[in-house]
Length: 204
Image (cartoon, rainbow, N blue to C red; front, side, top):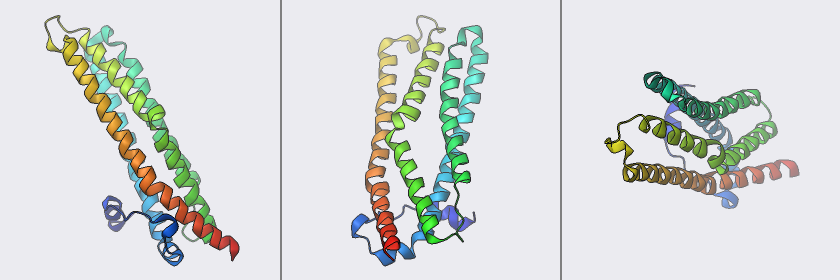
């Protein structure tokens, strides 16, 4: 990847038009958009996986500071590692199924469609593999820390804990809504465009 590739990842691309898109435009911009999508997935997997490993290290340190009483944090570490494993699996899958830019258009198109469909599945099932495990990990860590605090500590106040967990829950719902919107506005219309291009190739 060069600097131009990295720069394009962070620029918000135009929304795909779906069935209304011009076939010639889809064909002309195909490789550029395919590369941007592939690079964006690379950045996501590296950032999310790396962040997960940093969280694991932090949790291990908290467990060490807590001593034997911090044993429930082991469950939180396992949950976070499970999420990290998903991003590792996705990176391995991307490398295994990578189609070179010199391959025929039909092969690149088929690979691109498979990748988009996979990302749609991941984003639609975000609660199962991402939000719920991380939420459970946060719950376990907070309770593991609070249970060792003195009775007068504000962290043991049920109102404080309830407010904190409500905040975390609302934050996760927000993440889910943003990703659902991305599927509806970006992935679904782009799949329609690519299927339109594939139908044209098959009819040629």
